[in-house]
Image 1: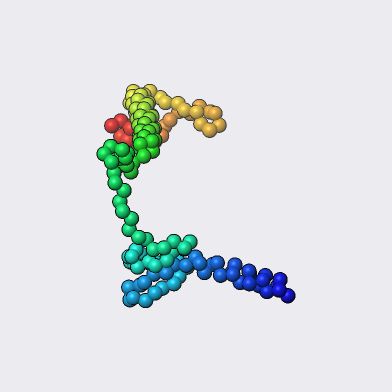
Image 2: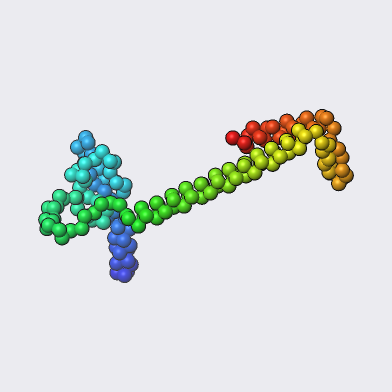
Length: 160
């Protein structure tokens, strides 16, 4: 029987440990507030009476005395991170420039081909093409006109 009382007492004490992780502060109206969550941001640090973990309220500590030249200056900037970021930006810019150069070369080649084809059409010679069946066919006037229009559109867009 005595063992059961001791076990019940131990269990009761262990269940109350959850209550130790509570915040205690004085709100703006002057009343004490107990909660398992932190106080709202408008509560000043001086009004926080207890924090979880049994930590007392924040007390101002004396600032450490800095000796001349002994403490490193903290700039808040990670040089390695900044260098990696700069390298990534440079690589992205180089890739973008390579893509633009590739597109410009393709447009220049399309312009050259369109000018050559237009010169062939303007010469008045008969133009033959191979159709879907592999048969050779000569372009009539309507097909020549539509092909000339297509070549002029290509030249207008790529020959700038």
